[in-house]
Amino acid sequence: MGADKSLTTQSHAGWIRPLAAAGLSLGLAACGGGGGDSANEKPMLLSGPLEFNRCAVPEQISIVREDEGAAGWKTNRYLKFAGSALTKLAAGPGMATTKNPEGVISHGPLHAQNCTPGTGSRQTLSFRVRTQGFFGTGAGNHLAFGTRATYPTFNALGNEQYEGIGAILHPGLGGVLPERFGAPFGGDVGASTDPQVEVKDNTSYLVEMSADRTGVSYHVTAEGTGQTTGWKQYQQPLTSGDLLSSGLLFAVLCKDSNARCEAFDIVFRIDITDIAAGWS
Image (tube, rainbow, N blue to C red):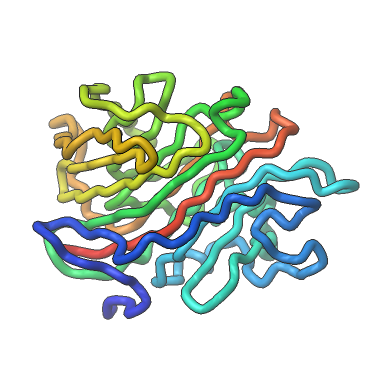
């Protein structure tokens, strides 16, 4: 499958970087319009297995907890692809939730896709992320970002099967840490080594990662203060199998018992923008 031309990448010493900094979407949701759309506009995108067949990486992913009036509080997912507006997802046929493309409701909201075509030995990913009302309110636990990921469309409770490697933003564990994701065999979280950045709301973080079959290099910068982790290297445990997949994973995990972000009836928002993915 050929590389998707909508992906904007720039190779520099094996890494990729966004070519320009787009303005972040910072306005909080109002009556179901969490993505900036009219509250009366019908969602244009459907949540479900077909999401995995979209080879174009979205330009923006927004996860918003918002009050929908009579429908109650919902955690909604919004996507923006090249040439389109930020659009709220609706549940596809047979889907119990719009939070996750495969319909799982036993973990926090996420955007996962298995289709990221390319050639080369290292998969690269960069983006900006900013939160509002997430960490400071006590709702948010951490954010997880993975590359070389696989995430089956059937991944029901008790049959979880996924893997990947990347970085997590976890204030409770000291800042930015590497993680080898995996189920059912289990994952691994690396050490919180110095230098670090403070993980908090209302700060734009530039996240850059590059992964081969057994490890990841990552670099996170808090753009307001200039705090940076510098480039860090992480090698997965010898017991972990080689990473052969090419998917991406963006996940939000809250402090409720199952991480589903449904125990907090407060507005929060996570915006992931300037997403660029490729191979080197």
